[in-house]
Structures are given as structure tokens and as C-alpha cells.
Length: 336
Image (tube, rainbow, N blue to C red):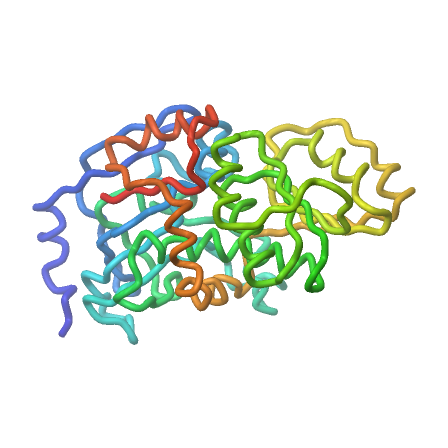
């Protein structure tokens, strides 16, 4: 059945609550008209939306924002409410998660399907409105179907878990390897979980937030800090990266996934002298699908790491608490 007929008048008559970013440090909860849906889009009821470190980075710096105001939130689990006339393969009631990437489809990287390396790469919640709202609209190529019995609070973790899986894949790490993860936030913590439960590595964790370190230690048998051959930099702090370069065994490999807020001094000679490989990790290639396949076996542990849901009205205050480092949880999420 074509549900797009009469959409314009229906949308004009109804409103929704949404969180809007107006500029650096300016986040407000507003009442808006429901978003207009094009013929090549899906209308989603947002069931869960995770708060990501990049959301906080944009709030602090405005670096990647392409339009203002904008509704943030790229970690989205939703239910299809309405299907555009030109869309095939979806129907109302389908449960989906968002693929956070927005790619051009034309550059050399896109032509070889390396969409995470698109020269014009953007993200949901930055170049278009995201999931911190009661409803959102996305194109069908920007979502993945998930089982209806997978809890939204777990399904929404497929996006950050995909980022973490990309880190593990980029490390090209053998089973049993000694790995130090610097930073026990969302991505660092999920990387540590994957390294232990899936890659079967010996995991050391460097995380100054004692409550968060304890939380991760409840589900991962962390090793005492000692020698390590691989490392993950998930803090975005230059001094931490320098320490990893200095302490890793010669010839080691370090995966970079943390977002650095400032340019800083770094001793590149140590990379040369010790033949250290630095490998960048940008979002994911096809790892979100891998993450979805892993969610059922990791669901109980992931639930342990996830905060109780918050309402849209609580998002601005939660941003401030997360930036201050006052959360013991690895993932805060919104239930509109």
C-alpha cells in the first residue's frame, strides 16, 4: 500500500520534539513539524539513539557540521512508519538501524565501495538531521534491517560496535596477542570486548575513570599492564599516543581511532627509530554487518555497559556530564 499520499498535509498538522544544535555549545530541545519525506526515503519512529563521542566533539568544536541548526544523532534504531513511493524492500513495521555514513557515490573510493573513505564523507546528524528526535527520515541505502526481537538498546550499538570491529580488523592481530587499549570510553571499551571475546587476545586497559574501568573489568578479564605488541589509541590525547609509541615493543602496531581536538607536538623520530606502524581507523567499511551478527552473543555484556535511557529533554545536560567525564557507563542513549 502506498502510504505517501497525503503526507504533506499530515506532516503539517503534527509536530514532534527534537534536540537541535544551533552552534558550538548551543544545544536546545525544540518542538518542530514532522520531517517531510521524499519518495526515495523511509520515515522512522526513533526507538533508540545513542550519544557518540563525535556528537560531543561537534558540540564542542562544530568541526564537521555542514548545516545549522541540525538534529544530531547517528546511532539510530527505528521502526519504519512509512515507505516512500520509490522505495522497494521495506514495509511499515520493519525494524532497522542507521548506517551513519553519507557518501557521494562518485569519487574513486566510492567506486571501489570504500564508502568510509569517500572524499566528501559526511554523517547523519551532521549533513542531515539525525536521531535525537521522535521521528526521522533516511534513504533505504542508509539503513540495515534487524530482527524485531532484538532490543532497541542493543540494536543501536551496532554502529559503535562496527567502528570497534573496524579497529580490530585494521590491527590484523593474531589470537593470543598482547594488546593495550588506551581509553575505556564507548569505542575503546567495545574494542577491548571484541579483542577478548572474539579475537581471543590478552587485553590491558588504560582508563583513568575508576568506575568505568571497574565496569569493564566485570565482563573482561583484564591483564595487568606490562609488555604489549599491539595498541589502540582511543582517547584523542597526544600524550597518550606518545606514551604508547614509547612503550610498545619495537615493530609494534598502533590503531588510531580517538578524535584529537587540537594539533600538538609529537616526536615522530620514535616511530622511525622503533619501526612503529600507525594505522588509521575511519568509521567502518562493512563492519556494521559483522557487528549485527555479533550482537546476540554479546547482548548480555553490552547491556551491562549501557546506561538507563534518557528522554530528549535530558540530552543537553547529559552532554555536559559526558564532557566532564562524570559517567560510569560506556553508552548513554535516548529513548524519545
